[in-house]
Image (cartoon, rainbow, N blue to C red; front, side):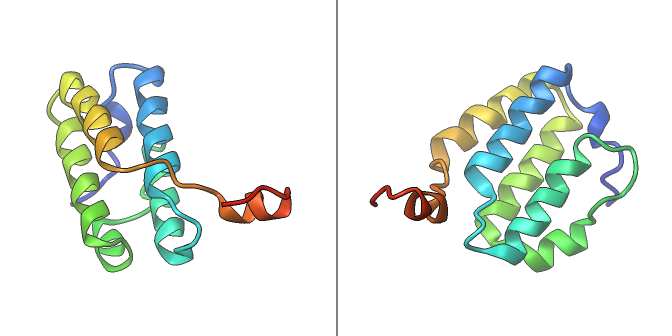
Length: 111
């Protein structure tokens, strides 16, 4: 399944940016560098008309729960803008914001 059509699946740039923010803030955890790398390639794919990442690469490098939500996003983007909005709400409820513990430690924060 090619992912080159995803940039056309959003109502506007604001909706695409909301989706990208969810991927960045809630799915891409740099404590899992390989997975994070492929999630960020997918993040980039949402804006590009060329193939940045394939489903095969995502399947090999992204954990099952996160892969499932990416597949749901792909389906939503190919179905309706309202489904994309619903995807954003669902993922926000299901995944907490990733805490950047390295930044906290470097800045003297605790946790």
